[in-house]
Length: 366
Image (cartoon, rainbow, N blue to C red; front, side, top):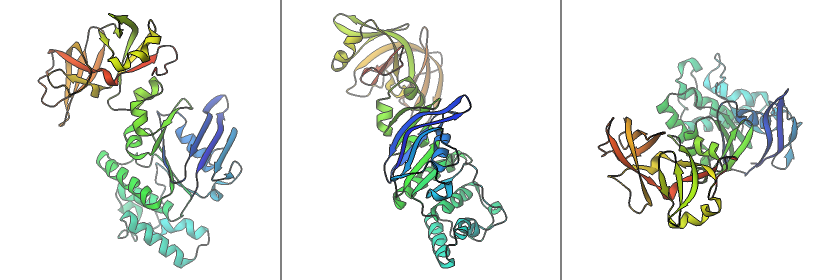
């Protein structure tokens, strides 16, 4: 078992910087998820750790061992790719055993490890089948099983669920999380899907344009995003943003947008008072935008007028697209709402949970 350390790691492809000054310490047995849009550097960061890409600058440690010049096969890692890369002419058993055979592992040990891994993954009845006889979910389990039998210090997973349908992805997410708990090994997982990241990771590293934006627990990323990018990327539907200015009215700190003026609750006044007069970005998540007929108890409420343009019934809630004078924004309403397309309604903002970002730096003010 081993922790991981990225120390001022850079990766350049010619003039293009794919990873810029990456510094992360990953604890032994942790489940860390790299998340971000396509081209943000998350897969490159994983491949640098695996030794599949050469570091341009900096150091990577697995445990206490500097691995910059260590070949991939000697790094004690196992990797699961988006394409499962199973040998089509081999059975499931032989696919899982192949890496161990190359390492001259004894036949009895190979048999023991393959059958144990197959039992853990629920594919012990499939060992004689060829990959073409398997479903996508079963192939994914075989690819994971091939990694498990290696008994590595670190598991690396690069978008392993991308080829599965939506229902199977949900099931596979849970299986991988259970597997992590069962094996007690360090997992590093790459995905562009923030729902996967939020549900699986003990910590999440959010990347954009090769730069680490924030690394934190899922809850802290959601509740306390460092900047506008993280705030907009984490959460579904995405956070609503409004151009705004902080000002004082009747001795209270308020935020003025092109559409409305709303006041901060008493306990948040002191935080924003030093920034009066500043141009900011006002952010509020759709789950904090309510139908005024169904307001949760105990919130600091502010009313805003808007028109309903689209409604999406999700069963347990209704996602409502709202149009104010200038902006379109979203709310997640109680399913009992009477909001209908074309209605003019009053919506309630939960001012306890709003976010304010500096307009210039895009960093959170808190």
